[in-house]
Length: 192
Length: 192
DNA sequence: CGGATCGTTGATCAACTTCAACGGTCGTGG
DNA sequence: CCACGACCGTTGAAGTTGATCAACGATCCG
Image (cartoon, rainbow over all chains, first blue to last red; front, side, top):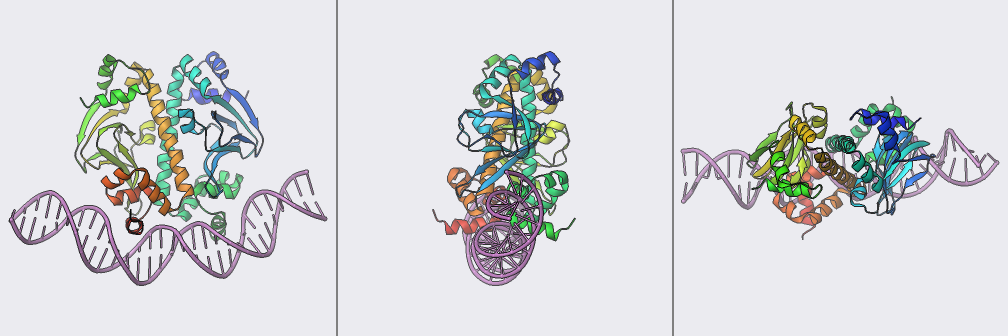
């Protein structure tokens, strides 16, 4: 069963029995979503926290000029959500869309609260997950502040070559803050 | 006692008695640090998580060309640390420096582990703190991706006018990813 | 076959950086 | 108490990165 991917992930941080996991999974909903399908959209008043079992999604927003910007990708074993909306129980500004056919687990805010009351040790798990996510942000800011856009692209491509090849280029461009045309020129210039 | 600032902060997220807090504070060290003093430096093998009681600090790194970049400011009631180093128990790449005379509480990684074992409900507190921190990052990325550098500066100045006036401009520039000269030109152009 | 959808290319242009020089202010030591 | 230097901000000229626009190509899928 695919849901076990979450079991293994939690077990990397806290010890958990199979019986506990069986109960825990009851707080989640399974979502199977096709390529291009939308999981969450701006204006949604009740948002969920999503865990990726298989596939790939991205979170984006639409700016004041109508341009879409990807703020985040999520692959297998990653959590993704609008954490401000989730913390405050407010509507979200973001969209989450599947880049390919994906299987996810979602947990609503009220269910997460119930889960954490029932299994306090899950607080440790989420604490670790969010701490790591925040740490990744600090690393990302290091790149943004110290490299030119060309270098940012090349380093990203070299760090995640398979990912860069499996995702539309305009999404990579959007995520890195470059124009799609410029990425195209960088590719040609840097044949490899 | 200044330490109570932390008590009040924790109480915003989880209920805590004064007696519990008295025990909790024992896991922390008090640090009083003068303007320009350095709390943490690149290469340090044991890093702490810091809570600001009074004052202001910033976290920065030195890039491959020797240029310093501020990735984060922290004011009263904020936590600051290199969370990758803290999670993995690895040396850090960052520096934390006081911008003005500051009072902080610091907790080492082993002490934090002991604290969390002794008071599991502190997991909830840190989970909330990191979740909010991560959410702030998502918001920051929205700005970076959708606005020009001029707009980023103006919006930052309008959102935190007192802060912008109390911190050296080259630090604001560094944090926002602009050259110090350009900030100077924006100020002149945008007299207000 | 025909239309989306995604990537490419070249010309033009603006935003922003870099460099070099100068000015003001503050604090410290003589 | 003054003078000097460190530190921070300013200014203008010149240069570069990377965006924008418009047009075209390629591929995929119905």
